[in-house]
Length: 471
RNA sequence: GCCGACGUAGCUCAGCUGGUUAGAGCGCCUGAUUGUGGAUCAGGAGGUCGAUGGUUCAAAUCCAUCCGUCGGUACCA
View 1 (cartoon, rainbow, N blue to C red):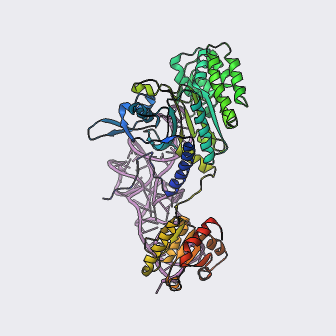
View 2: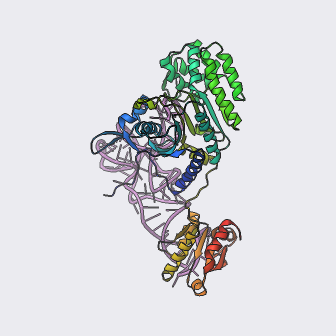
C-alpha cells in the first residue's frame, strides 16, 4: 500500500513562489542589519530541554516540541532565538561584548495553529547583549524602522513603552508584584478587545461570546481607575506623552529617573530623524512576556493592522544570568517573517515570481543539444539567469512551461537557425499582448510575435541589453 | 483549552428526506498543429466520498467515536 503524502498539522511547504518572496524579504532586512554592523549567528534547532525551559516561564514549557536522541537525552526544538542566544554568550567565553548579532531561523511551537500561525515558523532576530539601556535600544528601534522601509512596509508605526513605567503604574495603583504579569498580559490586549473588556478582565472576568468564561485578575475598582487614567494618556509627540506621565506620577517614587531614561531615548531618536510619526511612545504597549525589564516595543503595518505586530521586542536584562556568570543587560527585536509576509501580501507589496530564471533555452532538436547547452552556459557566464530545457517534449510544451513559470525570454535554436549561424530570441510578454487579437491558431503561429533573429555570437550581449530594457 | 460549523477529484463545489457504474467548473495530460506558449475543438487521467465502528437487504447520504479544517475565544516568547 502506498503512503499518503501529507504533513502534520501546523506545518506547511514553502513552494518556490513563497520562497522567492521570503528570500527577497530576508535579503533586504539582512542588508539593513549589516549596515548597522550586526553579525550573523546560527545555532542548532535542537537544544537541551533544561536550556530551553524555565527562562520564559511556564507558558514556554508546554509548547516545546520534544525530541529524542539516540542517547535518550532530554532534548527539544528551540521555540525562539533569544534563549539560544543567551546560551551562546554564556557558553563562549571569548565572545566580544557587546555581542551584536542577527539570526534568521526556524523555530517550533507545539501550539494550536491559527490562520497565519504555524507550528514551524521563521523568526528574524536582532539583539545586542552586554549593552545597557540607551544607545542599543535606540539602534534596535531605528533598525526596525529601516527594515520596514526596506521591505516596502510603509506606512508603519513602531510603538514603544517601558516595563519600568508600567512598574510605576503598579506602584501607584498599589497592585501586588505577583499580579504584574497578569496585568501586563491584559493591558497588551487593549488594542484587540477594547477598554471595556480590559476593565472586566482586570476585575471579575466575563463570559465571552462562545460561552467560555474568561478569568479576571481580581483588581479593585480604584486600582482599575488608576490604570484607566494611565491608559488614557495619548499625545501627538513623545514629549507630550512624557509630560502627561510626569503629571500623573508626580508623587510616585522613582518617577524622575524612569522618565529620564525614556526621555533621552526619545530625544536621541528625534535627533536622528526618527520622529513620532514612525516611533510613538504608547503606554498601552506591555508585551505579554514575563522576562522584559525595560523598554518594550512592537510594530504594525498601518495598512494591515489586522495582522497585529510584525515586530516585537524589548530589553531583557536578567535572562542571561540564569546560565551563571555576571548579569548581562540585553535588548533586541524579533521580526515575524511569516506574519510580515502575509501582511505585505494583502497590501500588494509582494510580487509573484515562480523562478529566478530570466531565460529558457529550448531544445527542439537533439542533434543541437550541445549547442543549446553552450548557449545556456554562455548566458550564465554573462550573468544572465538561464535555464536550459532538461525534460522531454516538443517546442510547444517548452514554451508553455516558460509561460507558466513567467520566464520572460526564450531562446529557440533549430536546424533553420543553425544553418544560418543565428538563434531566435522570443519575448514572451510581447507575443502574448500582440496575440490577443489573433483568432485562429494558424495566424497565431505564423505571426511569430515578439521574436527576433540574432547572430549566434551576439546572443549574450543582445539578451543583456533586452533585460536592461535598452533595445 | 473551550464553543460552533464543516470534511466528496490538485482547487472550488453539487449530490445527502438511504436505492444501479459518484458529477460539474477550473486546473492537469494527449491530440488537431512531428518549429511556437494564448484562444478554439476533440479526447484522457484523476475519487477506498476524512478514518473507524454501528444501523440497514442497501450508506457519500442516518448514528457514535476519533482525526482534520475553518470561524470565534483563550494563549502567543
